[in-house]
Length: 312
Image 1 (spheres, helix red, strand yellow):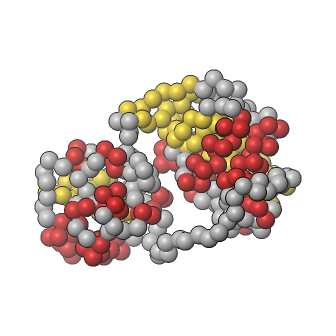
Image 2: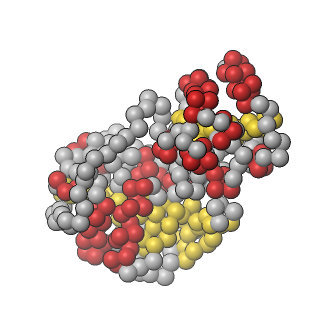
Image 3: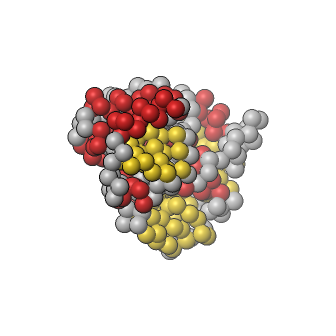
């Protein structure tokens, strides 16, 4: 069975989410094709050709793909789905993939299986439900399966310095004319990308203000960590929503997750419960976050965090 993976990229590099999605794809079929829809994307194509497990890189290079508009990229993926004989079409369960694949599934009139966490067989998958409180086993009966992959649940595919995948240019689908790129505002940061960071320091409403949130920055600097936040902190205006972790934010699974002043609402824990080691700092000994923490410190975060920084 051949599987099509829609690659997430920025025309220069392949996003880490694509590597995790390729790993999931190798468990669904034995021939993996990667779609790169972009513009002047030679660097991304070169990187894609070196991903282990990928046998072919399909390149649609056209100006209408330059900014990743879902309406245009989904049209390109649809053409391949209808003509390529694929058994599965996969995309990462990021904002990018979630924006594209539902359009493809709807046009194919098939049911999409969202945010799988495990491949049991080519037609049977596991996915979290009820904010991660339960796991559903889902069997897809459609001839073609449309799947988004919760990337933290799969290891990243390796890379081959030589690059063994065949690169094939394909005819670009026409501009859909349904959307126009206006602008993109990106949060500039020298810290690691939140979704793929090995260490995350996250703050909650217990910090009290955006000014107090800065107490976490030296701790993150000491650990080379990404900064994150609970939805309560984001809704309170302490930090921008780029940092939100949880069911309605980013899903993370770092090696070390430090939750500071986060009580542990189920929606937040759904976004970080797969972290390898969880450290919780909260003054309330009954805070739900302690139920999943490997290490817990009951105390005033304004005392504990400076002490922790000093020890480090």
